[in-house]
Length: 222
Image 1: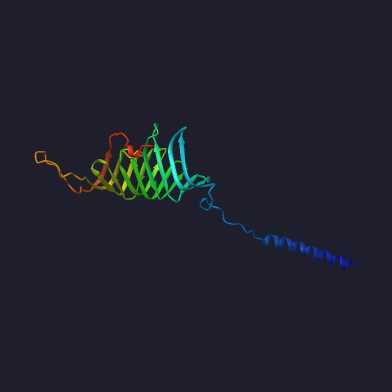
Image 2: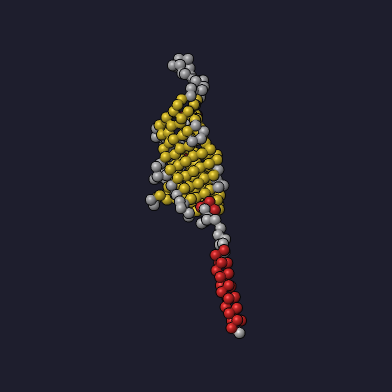
């Protein structure tokens, strides 16, 4: 009887040791950490037309097919199916409007516009590129890709590889630039001769500061 009890105790001890060894050999199956790129949007809106205020004053209008809002840090908005954006002045007239195939807004401050980016300001100056960044706090815009700027006076065009501007696109410069200015042939012989280069020479930098003009009625807020 004593031998039987001793054997039972030995078996219990062996089972206990085996259990401890088995616990040490277990591996927890943990999935990799979720990155911000794997996160789902906090909110998704479809077919939106939204007014956005700045310091209590309506300053922007957004029109988009899809709008995804991410609450990860830093916060991010995505417009993967295109964006139309208008900026208003204090009298609710349109200062400029732009559109892009794809747009991102990082930390409610930095806009990144991609694809076919087109911007028209209140003076009628037209900007075209495949990239545009806009810092709302610094009130600056820039692009590191090929750009073309068409001014309303005689359809004057400038193009180059790098663009820097204020956010109204009235004071800007383009590096490695070239351009042309069409000139009418209707001038009379009595008038002073006009130089008409069809293609201007390449320049290291072209700097343009446009005078203030009244907003064209075609882009005024209805």
